[in-house]
Image (tube, rainbow, N blue to C red; front, side, top):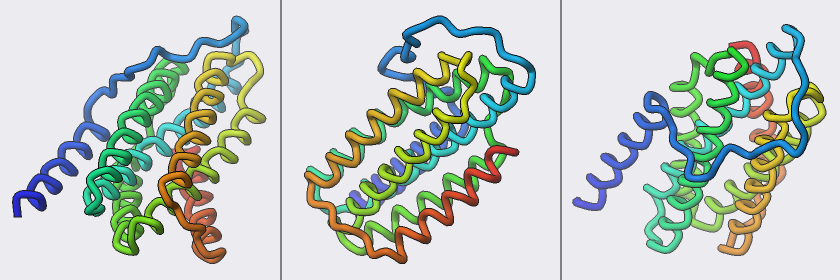
Length: 209
């Protein structure tokens, strides 16, 4: 009973902090290798929209890891999910900082994105730890590909945003490798396709609102 209550309270606290508190990174904002140039208004809007999409992805990552940590009965795996969530908080803080610097705004649908990702994390966790880890590995693989696409679309002059995305890409690849090492199992092809479709909807909507 105490474990269930602790999980509920912890999940509620994580949701409130993710959605309504200012995130604090444990690592410094990645610095670009070269100084950036000036952005046109159109470039600034596009960069802001892309970083908003990335911020939504980090909101979803917090929800996913929090749900999976709440469901697993393996203490070591719970610590793994909690550590991953803490590192993703850096991404949450970095993307929010770039959104603010670009004069843009976070998605107004963040509570909806969080709730959806939390539900998916609970479902994945109910299928067992190997499936839950497989969901993480596939999510990170798709996120890494998505970040590659953003590097192609970000204005060349926005070296600050590009540095953030490049570091995020490295971290996501490491999280996927850690999930495989922890015993992840490959998800079936239909599950991967559904994940890609859901991601496409999210990124398309978040790019606008």
